[in-house]
Length: 204
Image 1 (cartoon, rainbow, N blue to C red):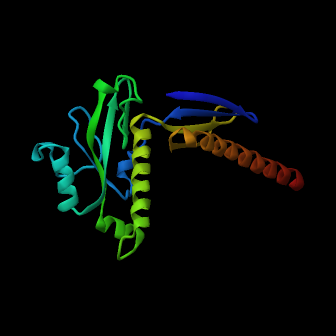
Image 2: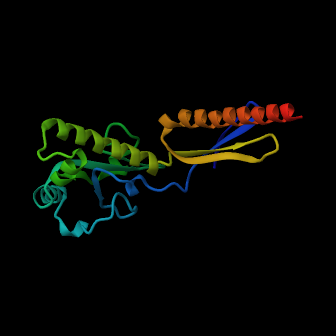
């Protein structure tokens, strides 16, 4: 799916929605995201099943006591013409959230996760705060993915030859950065062509 065509110094930058990008939950994440939803396969793969727990409170107790989760943030899912996930309820901030949103799971980090990530033997309040910030950030990144906000670009010369391409830019915040990288590719290509031309003239 093409999003935008940009003409730059005689070259064409085509930006598009990258539908083949891998899920951020396949990356090396600090948190574990457990989700239960009848219509979508969300979060990380775990052996836990929704029927094993009598509600969210029992699941949270299990994560904290059995798995020693230090931080356990609730996850909410919204499904109305688009899908979105957040650590904050959609009630009061999304259209039809009363009917089309609700709790879907947790993202959590255990004592072992935190100690390993920060390479420490004891967990300070600062590490807990830093970990919570990372878990919220991981959720925001995953939200961009399930909303389809993943972009890529191709660069073509005047004859339509592909000069460069790249994908996997997650979120609108990285869209401008992606376009600038495409322009940098063009600047570099032009610079190298000038060098070759100059060398050819000198040799002649």
